[in-house]
Length: 425
Image (cartoon, rainbow, N blue to C red):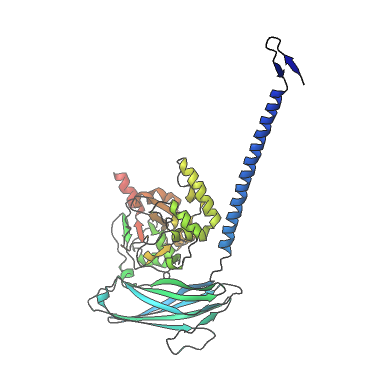
């Protein structure tokens, strides 16, 4: 020990004490850093484990592998009496699982006709199982759909309306409630689809000199082919330079990309995350959020939510939608689409780019899939010719198709005339 004695005050000074204090301070700082590091590491591990458990829970939820698809229909008209006959297929996608259907009920709903104008309506369901004899009564016997197999059901709806009723703008919606019973337990599924009423709309093909022309159609559904719909309703005097646009929701509906809200099983994660969105957002409800989670996975949605929240603090908006996947921007919650799809969650269309290219080649016209609202926002999902992008946005800013029940999912843009008119100004 080195000691210095001050002869005036006779103090003893230890020269090594400051060194020891400094060393202790360094040790304390190192210890605190290690604690902080271990805490961060612990938080990271807990977060990873939590995400993994959520992901595994989502992955291993045993759901029914059955899917229901309408295949064809026919319509028989006799005066004010009409009969629809539709065939639906129930497919088991699973390689091993067998699923039972304990019940199958159909509730027909006429859209566009007042209850007082409907004189009578009758429904008959006939199972057409490939391995059983045709049923002679209306009783639904529980049936097993074996793995990688399918069965058919014929639905017959006959109704009578008053003679004075205009039947051109209505459609028949079949609301299907059916049971699924198997290793996953027992629950009720809900499906619905439109039986189209083409009436005389396809024969009108109105032609006029409007630069931007909304085109009215019947209520579209999964039994409609998108390209055939464009072909049926586009005016005869279209030029190859004209642009025919279709809304993203009508295209998605024809592709069967919609889900009855009653069929969605909501998780705790969806209930929590949806609270962080503006009330008008389609992701502000548990069912809307759960739909996105089912598509993009829980981990991706949770991380996108966290990163989006942090970015929002620094005034960087829209990061969640960039990270959570394409459907985050495209999902329409219930009430976001025209009836009878107002009770369904409608997804974005599938492979819209290929659709535009194929439709353009077949119809000899420019085609675009768009998402337009009354706020003047125009989003072009796909188009066969990107050179038309700015023109389409300018033409659709006023939302000529409307956001209500106009039934105008198509809009024709007279490209050359619109350009000439703009130059004339």
